[in-house]
Amino acid sequence: MLPVERIIGEEGLSATPRGARLAMRLPWYRSLPFSTVEVAGVTLDGAPVDLADAIVEFDDTSFPLSDIGEQTNAFWFVRDSAFLVLPGVNLAANSEHEVSLLLHVNPPYIPGMKRVNPQTATLRVN
Image 1 (spheres, rainbow, N blue to C red):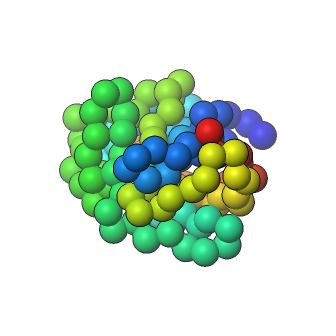
Image 2 (spheres, rainbow, N blue to C red; image 1 turned 90 degrees about the vertical axis):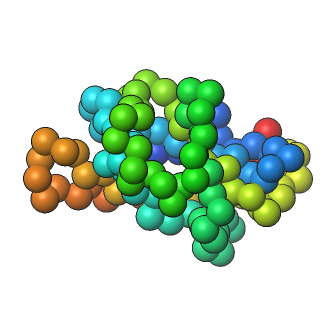
């Protein structure tokens, strides 16, 4: 899988006190503001995950997923993972789960373009 096709980060899936934490990679060849990225969906073992309370963590900062469109000055660097925290999703350590992530990327310098990026992987909880 090419780096621009991989959207689930190598850090994978973790259990935290706040909920499950999924590593995400930017599927683009250069860094972009978070406002150009949409987390369009997450499924866990085939069931859709409610993203209403999800939080994005990146570079020692965090913001509600619902505010991602306002993050025009926060850049997602292409070589770094961002993390999606899913409150209320509690996973047992070392359990395996099929995770599907769907990201849309709308580069600001290509008007009207919307790149759809799906990936499904079986991940062991760290």
